[in-house]
Image 1 (cartoon, rainbow, N blue to C red):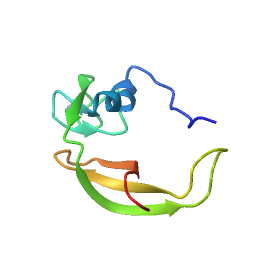
Image 2 (image 1 turned 30 degrees about the vertical axis):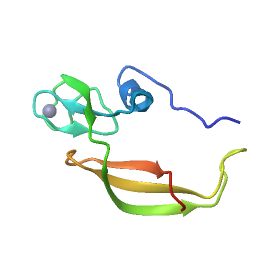
Image 3 (image 1 turned 90 degrees about the horizontal axis):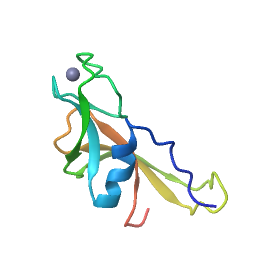
Length: 104
Ligand SMILES: [Zn+2]
């Protein structure tokens, strides 16, 4: 069974598809500069709807993590790591993500 994918829409599509081009795309308000994650159509800080996705560095610092041993759907490889990562250059955003490319 393939890993479930999120339902894409005009607001979240850049975030979920940017990785195919090697980019981490985070929504940002063009009026006040606030980064918005998860992606939102309206800025939570100034209520502007002038929000667009912006490529960010894609590096950061693992703040915390958990190693999961439960396969929540058939075919999910375990163990896997879910972490909360503060992104470099993206103040106020902590990304919940898998950590890959290293042993748990
Ligand atoms: Zn704003």
